[in-house]
Image 1 (cartoon, rainbow, N blue to C red):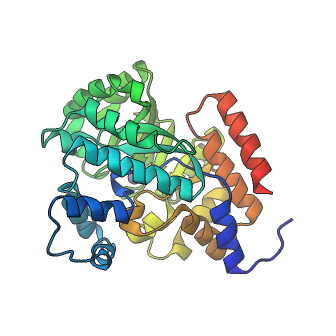
Image 2: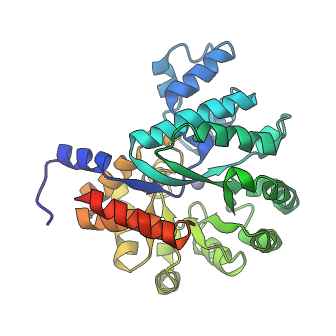
Length: 339
Ligand SMILES: [Zn+2]
């Protein structure tokens, strides 16, 4: 039964129930307290004299500002122990939100370019994540399309060496327009041969052709974002017929101005057309959202019921890359705890 509830009750319920995240970038999800400590470790930054100034600094303004922030914060991630430290803080934040299972992107390339090594980066991250046993985190190696297909192939070979740290899949983030899926067909084929699961960012900055490319050229199992699929009727039908999961990130899409207002987000229309949707936060450090905020927006603005929220959360289990017996166990546990 869905009894009418006050907004506070909704927030409390959303915070309490178990959840999953399938589209979350580790480097964009560092809790601000941990980021503050890292900045202090390296002597501070005069442009960020206080914790409040840091919050304001990350207050997302537009996409160029986002890229600027992304690069700025990387200056304070220098040593392997920094990655262990931020991963510990990150995992504890997932536990605080009662996120019980997550598949999380990490892109080592920028850090490799300043002298760190992929295997030790993943080892440090795994050590940090292991300190929070109440959440299980699998890793997705992000090849970052902006470095081009040759570098992606080289990075992929490094990912094969770090599977023991729980790297189970690969993805491509970055500039969808400049680096379309077609460039990475051979990389994805190789990744599948290595036994990696696959997702690809598409249908966020670029329109439906990028999603078609991710499906037909890359044979991606999931679509990162995919929200702009709504612009192509036949694509929406295809996604629904084949139950290809979308990793929707509604509040991220508003912050990056893919859709002007949350009222314009196609989450409800895609759901009603039978597309398999999962709900995610993308880069919560940059966008200031929690997973509960994303679900609350769906309920408050698009009229999702609590039963529909439960369905979306369970979609996150079904669309995950867990083995089927583990999925069944999570579904049982979650269903019992929803009540
Ligand atoms: Zn993303």
